[in-house]
Image 1 (spheres, rainbow, N blue to C red):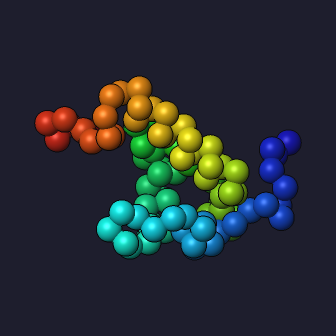
Image 2 (image 1 turned 30 degrees about the vertical axis):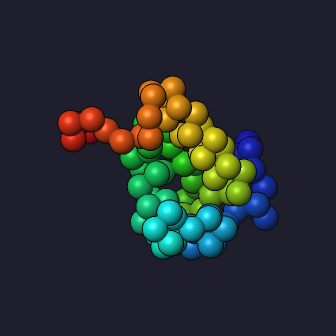
Image 3 (image 1 turned 180 degrees about the vertical axis):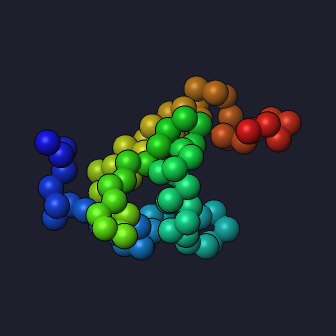
Length: 87
């Protein structure tokens, strides 16, 4: 059984609208959220569900992703930047 309610799902376009502006004053793109879901950040992935052709997440999953990826960044010591260009 799913651990979300259908009425909690928001599209990635809706999700970027609730995220704060980046430091350079631009908004996060939906392609960034797709990357967070597909590739993750420091081993942390944004949870999404695919319904037909659409990809959806929840506000709760966004918060969990931000909290978890921020915690990993703190543990690896630094700002999340990779050293030496290694992936």
